[in-house]
Length: 65
Image 1 (spheres, rainbow, N blue to C red):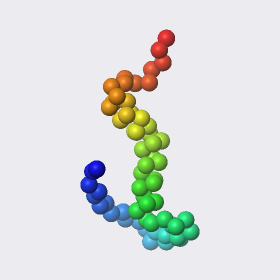
Image 2: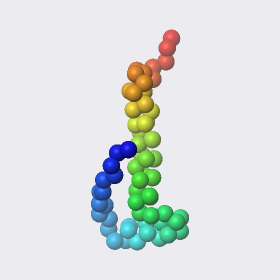
Image 3: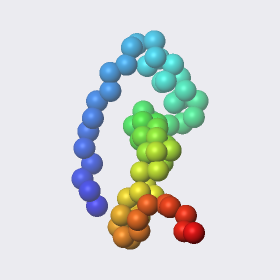
């Protein structure tokens, strides 16, 4: 498994206060929340399916005719 690395995030105080309230209501840590947002964004951009296709040697998603 890959080693975990730390990255910091700078946010305006008012935004951080809102995020912390949201996290408390949902029982999440800041780290869990940020990881979830990153994974959602990568999934939306089809990064995971692109990587899987590359590993399987599958070219693009062109429909065969």
